[in-house]
Length: 238
Image 1 (spheres, rainbow, N blue to C red):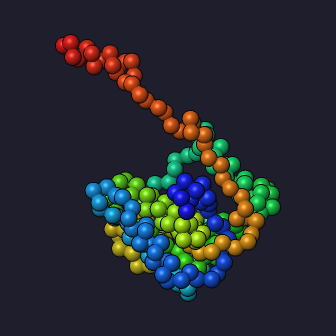
Image 2: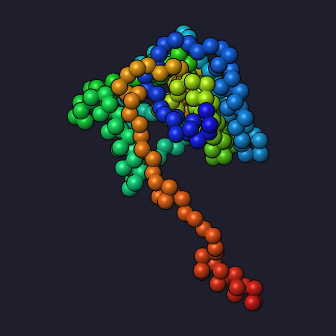
Image 3: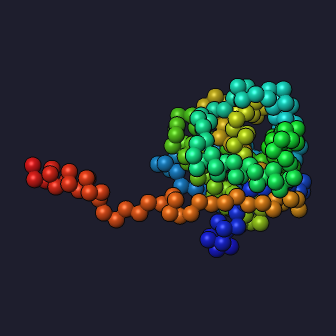
């Protein structure tokens, strides 16, 4: 696929077929993602790629944990969560949520079905593979930023090989049990999971989120702001 076409076609899969991907396809996807640029070439990401029974084992354990620890106060993220969604960010978050539940025929008042759908995050939507992405604690914000680039490239590489994916921040919210289950050392911070597989034919896979208009996110600057230019002239004169 041409890159522009690939970016236009990428979407988040929320229902997978159980069939495992061929080993060579998985490796090719990972090899491509490994070319991600990083701060000073530190490449802070580490990936635990689970397949087969390991996916079921981790999913069952996480579902049980979330059911028994359902409140936000019981979440254990390694990374700071958004303080709030406000303004246009709240609008976009709500729009994505409404589109998701509408595709499934779930009413806003049906908290039971909404909770069931939320739990699907922790069984990875039935995907046969999941990549748990962690970063080096000492790299701080820049390590997390690099991992974001890696996750984006991993999903784009997957699509180029005909593989569906979804980045799962929900997994990062349960960093405590993920660390314990996978035996991760304390110097690794859990960023997110990425589920990988072939998409199932399901209504939840038919909806798409919207994107902001270019003028809403890009500010073109082709000359110094007037105040800055004036200050520069004054300094030059001094």
